[in-house]
Length: 73
Image: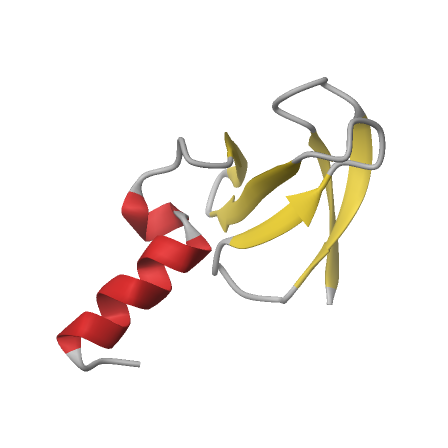
């Protein structure tokens, strides 16, 4: 597990987020405002998206649905 330091896209609260040691997007919950957001490690750092505003490839639920529909894992 890696720890990423990110700012909540809703309230800007800076916080550490635990994440797998890969580039897969994951959900996190802000410790300050309690809202869910998406954290995605990229080669140049970390992308943070509001829930529902990320492109499909960066949204864990959408990505899972797309891969399931295509028969890939």
